[in-house]
Image 1 (cartoon, helix red, strand yellow):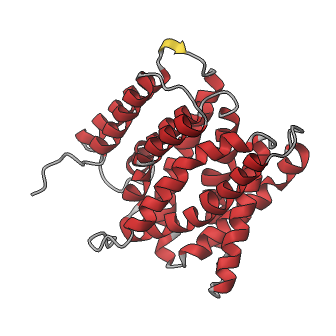
Image 2 (cartoon, rainbow, N blue to C red):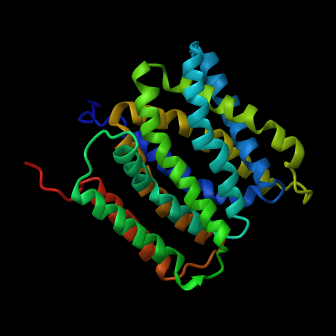
Image 3 (cartoon, rainbow, N blue to C red):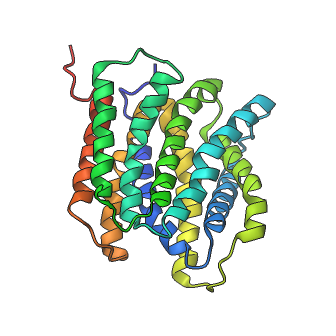
Length: 297
C-alpha cells in the first residue's frame, strides 16, 4: 500500500499541479513559431535533456531491462507523444481555459481504466455516479446547448482523446513500472528520451510554422519543456510511487484552476459562465468517483 500518511509527496503534488496548470498557457504561446508537432517535440527534448543532466549529476542510471523500456515507450506515447501533439493542435482553435478544464477529466478516465481494464477493484455505485457527473460537466464546459460554440468538434475530440490516454497512463505506470523500484528520475528521463526519438521525424517534416521567433514564445517552450515535461514528470512518478495512481491523477483538480487564472490574466481570454461551472461539475464527478464523500468508518 502507498505510504500516504506521511504526506511527504504533497510538495511534489502541488508543484506538478501548478506547472501543468500553466502548461496550457505555454502551449498557446509556443504556437507562435512552432507547429503542434514542433511543440510536442521541443517540450519532450527539453524535458529529456533536463532530466538526463539531473540523472548524470546524481549518478542515476537509466533502466537496463528491455521490458522496462517497452513499458516506458507505451507511457511516453500516452503521456507525451500523442497528447503533446493533440493538445497543441486543439489549442490552435480553442482557448487554453477550455483545454485546462477538460484536462480535469483525467481522474475520471484514470478511474475508468482502473476499474474496467486493470480491474483493481469491482465497480461501485459511487464510481458509476462519478463518471456520469463528470460527463455532464464536460457538456457544460462545452456549452452543448450552443453546439460546440467556437470549439470545432475535432478540437474537442483531440482534447478528450488526450485525457483518455492520460487516464490510461496512470494505472499502467502503477502496474508495470512503479513495482520495479526504479528511481523516478530514471523512469522519467527514459520516458522523455523515447518520446523525443519518436517525435524526431514529425519535427523534421513539420516542426516550424515560419512565423518567426519571439522572446515570449521561446521562453514559453523553455518553461514547458524544462518544467512541464522535465521536473514535473519526475515528480509525477514520485507521487504515483508514494500515494498511488488514483491520488496522483487528482493533480488535475489544481490544473484547471491555474489554467483559468493564467488564461484570463496573461492571454486575456474570455470566460463564459458555463465553463467554470462545468469545471466544478467535472471536479465534483472526480471526487464522487474516488469516494471522497463516503463516510469513513
